[in-house]
Length: 119
Picture 1 (tube, rainbow, N blue to C red):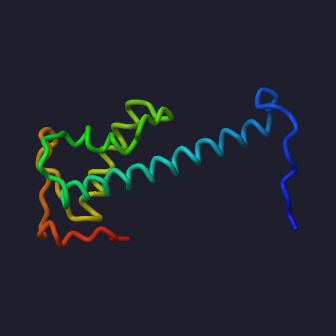
Picture 2 (picture 1 turned 60 degrees about the vertical axis):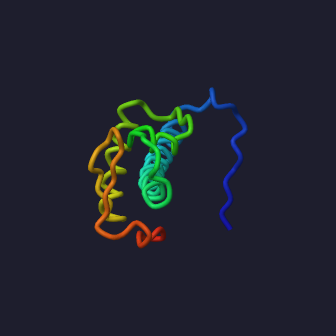
């Protein structure tokens, strides 16, 4: 059976190959979280369209609610995530963003028939 050996030092003492491994893990985790946030942004926008479209908002403000003070990403990265979520919204839920501010979303199917559990 394989088992990791616990690291006895502190984070400040990590160097060499171990530091490279930590950096790689951090990058992979950041990319994974980014993809999950993009999916969540699109899902949140779909739910907003389906159940709660009576408030004027912008797309950026709507999907920013998903991040909840996430400080691991720069403004450029967050902007890219928002743009990617628009593509996911279109490809996964068949919802188009007609206007970003004020937010106007359109769908080819009636709102009540939008499938929430598309995989």
